[in-house]
Length: 472
Image (tube, rainbow, N blue to C red):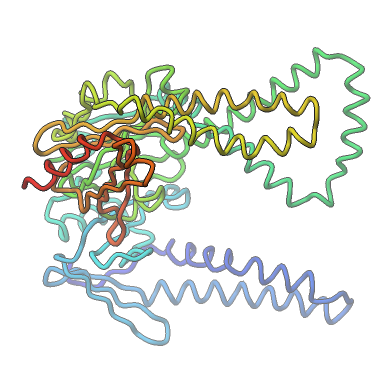
């Protein structure tokens, strides 16, 4: 592989599309605000458009032709630049991860995109090969990481393997809260066209329609609910379709995506924590999603440096799967509960924002507005659930687990050597009741850290946790 190689010619077209996408807004503004006219000026507008597109296409072709790469003396060497020739050398020792993905265009031609992440971090990959064959991607990974990554062929034959079923993805979509995301996205989209949509006319027609048949109206509402539910399922399946986790030695290789195929590697040695999330709906049916908190990598940047390990699993099977793929982590059977004197503080913290919000509304909409104060009850119940679910447990001399709830119940599993900082804090009110807050920080990403905390644990328990952490 010492000879310079070029990307697939499709890379020129991808570069062309990328540049055109960036030019859409300037061109649109030029056509809209460039003035109205006839004759020569109209032809000038279209001439600018044609010249811009041809120039962009030519730039994509030249960029592809001038971009070469090769592997020599244990490093990836890239040369690029249309007018100014640039060189980038990436030694094998600096490479952290190699991610492989395939968008719709790449998949049509049986190609993939390869991204290389190094220890320097940043928001972009150190090197991106936008269009190469799968075999070429496997050869590059094999040469640069010496079998640290699993190949496409090995993915099919690997023994230790987890694959999400379509049933699990449908349940995950139905219980993930993505329906609310679809509704808010739809509202934001239509909000851009407020002046164009005749809402008054629609309201008039709807009022006339309501006199016709309530059954038809009910069917329309049900259809709208079904449509939103179907869209949320489509989004989930498109993102996590063909979701597969393969354990290959000391690495986890995750592959997912129906429209855009993605494959990336997580070395088990770089896992900082395991996070198990249960929103109330999933908790009701006994399901949870499992995430990996990893020290870096492009894959994690999609969701605050967290990578989905299992999109949806039965809570009863979590420990079984963890023992197979990340054997040093397990969910304890019980947690050290908070002292009962912390209950009042949890309820008060949950109720106070609701009271501050609802009191003014109730005052201005008397007398019926006072009924809104009944909403304080569910907020008080949320406070009780937060108190009930909070806890810290020292599993053994090497492992610690946290449990807490904001709205979603979280269980965090940590290893002592992965905890960057453990701190305690006490307010004046906590000190009076012999309570404290425990803060834990882990590395998340190459240059970031992630913070977990449990509020109002017993002061004596806080001392025990600090002694546990200091004992190396």
